[in-house]
Image (tube, rainbow, N blue to C red):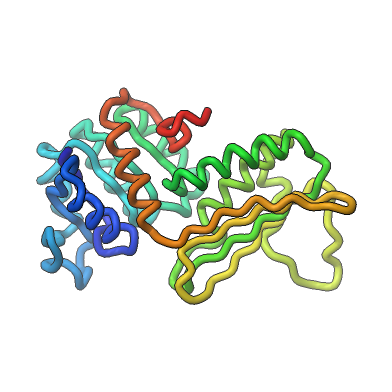
Length: 257
């Protein structure tokens, strides 16, 4: 399978390329970064400018994109012209940007997931089921990542909050609280708190707390290596090339729905 990696010099891009090189099922035909990135001209395969994306799509089976929201949308504009499936691991999309991705998915297969690991996607399912069973318990979400991560909360934490709110028949926009500060922080009944920590080289920790009177349940996923995310992205790519146009996520790949 011939893959194109966008965001090749980033943490995830490097890991995906390394795992793909070790796997005979994949061939990285080109690695791309934004114009002006100091990594262009280096690496194996040699990293090229994202401006070259249109030149290589005719020979590609799938594109894996771990960049930023604006870059991902620009890339999709070109990719749809060649009917190439796209795996998107980029996070931080606005509601409007997600709507644009949905529009693109009418033309090409797109898999969008804030987290490609098997464990996190099982966590998504568990949070939905537990929330349905104890909807009156307070729900708080804590996520930890390395000190270079740009977006907060993480895409995974945001998705966990969305899942919990939906299971309570609520809209996360109406009940989310991001961090706490001040003298009057009494918790509202339906509130879902989301808290972010940025420190050191933490790959990614997520804990969802369900707290009732006299007890609490904690569901935690800790990633010790980015390999788990990269392996998930490659698994998603292998699955996506067999699908028709539409918007998918890792639950589809893992048959968790």
